[in-house]
Image (tube, rainbow, N blue to C red):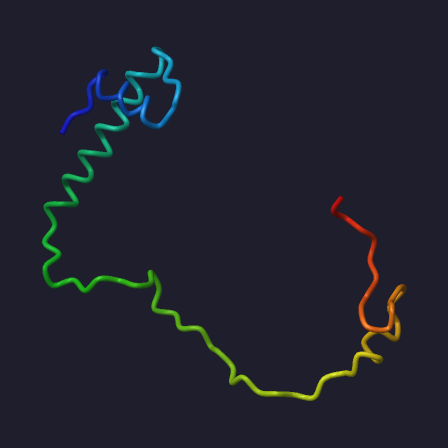
Length: 95
């Protein structure tokens, strides 16, 4: 498939892009080189290649989820600049 000025103008319209006439030739060349590269990739035999779900073989090292002792509400609020006994008090940021 080759991109011509008519196809470029249609693509630009669908993408809601303004395409100045001075940039059309350069853009047509760029799009045609991408399409040529895609055609080269389509020639590669990928019949025995398994699909990837991740680009890396790295595996997350997850820790076991354990219940650990935590601090009480009173201890957590002890050094708060403003609090109402149950929650931190902060300045209003949404009007």
